[in-house]
Amino acid sequence: MHTNVCLIGSTRFEELFRKLEYDLSIRGYIVLSPLVYNQTGDNPGCGHEEKRILDFVQKEKIRQSDIVLVVDKDGYVGKSTRKQIEYSELLNKRVLYYSKDEINILK
Image (cartoon, rainbow, N blue to C red):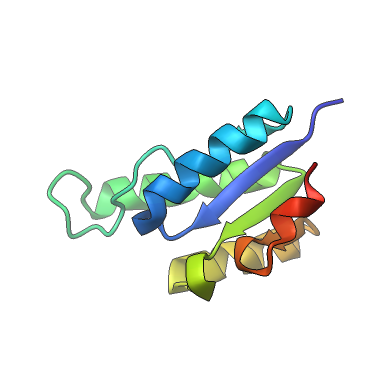
C-alpha cells in the first residue's frame, strides 16, 4: 500500500514545496501538492472564483491523503493554512510540521 502525503502551506514557499515534492517522491510517497502558486485572488491570473475552486481541490487532496505535511517555513502559518489544518484534524489526518523537523518521521 502506498502512502499519500498532502503538502499544505503558504504558496509563497514554492521552492520549498518543489524540494519536498521531490524528496518525498524519491522516498516512495505519493505527493499531493498545490499546482498553482499564486492563489491570493488579487492576481489577475488567479481571481476569486479560481481561488475558490483551488481551495476546494486542496480540501479533496487532504481528504485523499494519509498524512498532511504543513510547509510552515520559519513557523509561518497563514489563515488559509490554519483552516486546512483544522479540516485535516476534523478528518483525523496525521498532521506533521516542516518547521518542527517532523519530515524526518517520513523515511
